[in-house]
Length: 242
Length: 306
Image (tube, rainbow over all chains, first blue to last red; front, side, top):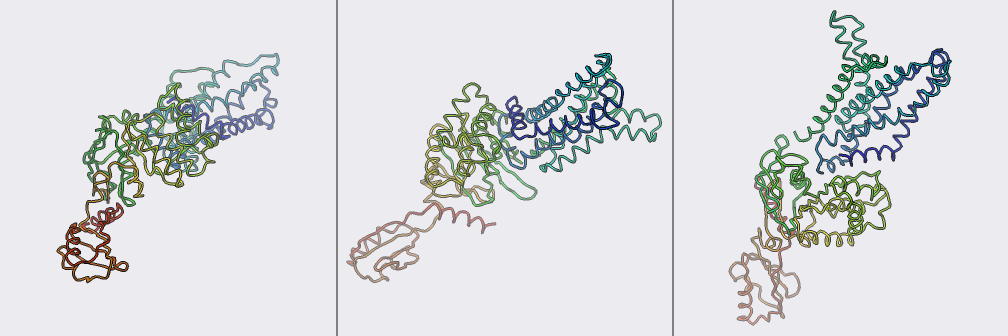
């Protein structure tokens, strides 16, 4: 499994995907944080990273879908999946190797944003006057969010051998899970169940963690969604045997 | 027996791609899989490598069932798939190293990769990306990959496709060498290849085995006709030959040279007739049935039956 994981990472690095994703992510977030009026830290007047944590889930929808869209689709199309599946590897090992490689790439994209934290830390008055706890929590939340998106992307890629279809399906599912449920609950259609409907959306849990409270219920939610989509990927991937 | 196949079937809807085939292959044997397009060769190989499960029937590879112990089977098998899929954005060495790691070769991986690169004659191209290689060299990468872990069983789906004549000779030699102490199953539709490499041939048509024999025996099988070429030193009376029992037809192919098609080997009788009638016999030979003819007869026969 480790060898497949390493191969996936190497293929990200050698095919420019990794660099493009990281650069686009940092550029987009950087523009929102420091340049675009209305969003930037200076206009906000508070020493925080809110624009990073508000924009990142949206940027991730595009970027993570782009990272994961080829993981299974490309191998299915080129036939290399036959090579991989006739090696002594279980379906779980292949799915997990591809999943963790995508998660590591998400982590690579997140790490450089620490520079933003340091900048705001230095700019604040007095220096260092910012809510480090909340920012730590937000980072953890954002990492979980990326991990969930990656599992959705892997699932979408396992479903089809067409990368574009995989990309679109993944984007839709990410968006749907991120916000659709909380928007749905805003209609107040379900009476007392509104809170339950809202509970299904990633946004609710992401916002919970962003406050700086890493609640085990939120973590459990993220982990279960990841497990659910990975299990789905494994099932779809194994469906060639049906 | 390193491979035992029992009543293996694969159905796609109503189409029977492979229909209850059974055969065996032992170590030290190169087994050739022969058949027209869509006969079920690749499907059988895919089932043996645990890529797709059979609809019914079973097979064991070195004692491990392909249904219950797919991981064990995959460890033992080296497989070259039909269209030789490769990660085209990887370098040759990088790719082989990756495959070696999957097979758990660990520290010996590097040495083994270099060994395989020189064995298949990839050395001059080994520094390139796989995508930049020509078809023949890609095929060599695929072959190297399949033999990396010294598999007990080697399954090659059209191993020599896309190679030039020189390369084909090299690769055949390599496969034969490997087949000395291992089991090799290869599919092809090139007859000379079977004659050059295989100890045993299985001809498969429309999912069924129509012939399963040693290569040298197969030439005699499935053909009811014998063809004898006779040459005389002077003009002769054709009707004398026609009188011999078992003669079906006689055609004059050159001056004083005849092609006789008959039911049994009648060389002795021809000789006798020639001697008795003073026909001045110069040459008498039984034309060997080529595997092509056997193949044609066998695969056409079942077409008619169906």
